Image 1 (cartoon, one colour):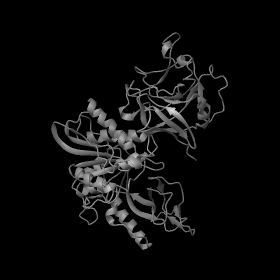
Image 2 (cartoon, rainbow, N blue to C red):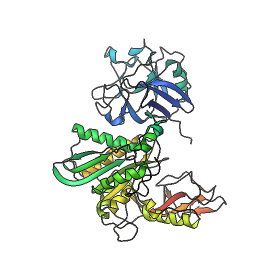
Image 3 (cartoon, rainbow, N blue to C red):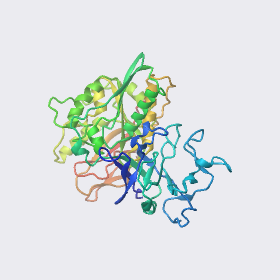
Length: 506
């Protein structure tokens, strides 16, 4: 099934009015307007601030005014329903950010048809912001609708020129997402190579552990920054009180990649992470600041997302051991932490499997990297005497990934007894050990199915097929991990996992 195209709304970050942007769907684009006071991170959005939230949000349905538009097409792919005189979008009270029906003569000034004379609300497409579990005051009634003739800013909605609305609605598809953010095309030229890291720390008045929460180690994984910024705002407002220990939030670890909207700046920050005496690139310079920061903490929660579809999961470290690859002595504490972050899947065994991947590359004649290429934030944290996990919140484009990340932050703080909250329950039901890796040997090697991380495979089931027709079968009942559907020779096609007997609950 082909995914529906995404709507992109981009606003220049440095030039021009803050409320002017461009809306595009595929190869079609139109000028648009956003909030009169510009964009704002979704976690900071508040009712009445005249700002449009940054993020990726679902579009589920639309409305049209059949009185103003009697010829509105009825055969559109995207679901539209006619507005009625009693429809109100609640911006206060118990039904906050919900469509409600008013009684006859009740609240005439708040009805969606009230702007019929202006024509701004002839077509309305609600944006799925703050609506899954609406939080009072965080923003409501964020729509796509017609822009004013002078292209002035909105109260937070997206405005499309009236003469572009017909084309716009014809391009909408069921399941479509809207991605709202700043234009980044010129950031590579403008970016200062010494862009600093920003951390925010909250210290309780009683002793306790030191937790660090990190986002955007990879710049195209935006759920981490959004979840972290929401947690920071909650701490600042008093909705979340750190009583014991201290938590450090690093919303964006790789600012260069984040501003470019790419996975990497100069290279992958989550590879060969260590102090570099002579830094050679942007990520080396970041690493020289990130490594001491990690060493200064006891526990790490590193928030990521992944390409394609799949269920959220946690990547944990190895069992306790004194081996040469990844010696460790906090497996019980780390396992208990991983098991309570809200996902049903926990995976471990990365570094050993990565070592096997490098060995297979060497056997195939590829120039190889050092084994330290497998060292990222969590591996470095364990090397430094602490423990940490990687939370993979789901697809890059899934709006729910932010909620997964935010919930995990709250669970982490509760589990470590840093806030006054009940201990979180154990959510992990499946524990997987990464056992092996399949490597692409030649152009044409491919995975046999549209696998996703966590997919089960039976012993003997075809996993991949070589260009020469050879079928690679599952050596046992197991699981697909990190499938790469665009693998090139020397890349991993996928990792293979097996059910682990490791107990995590602790």
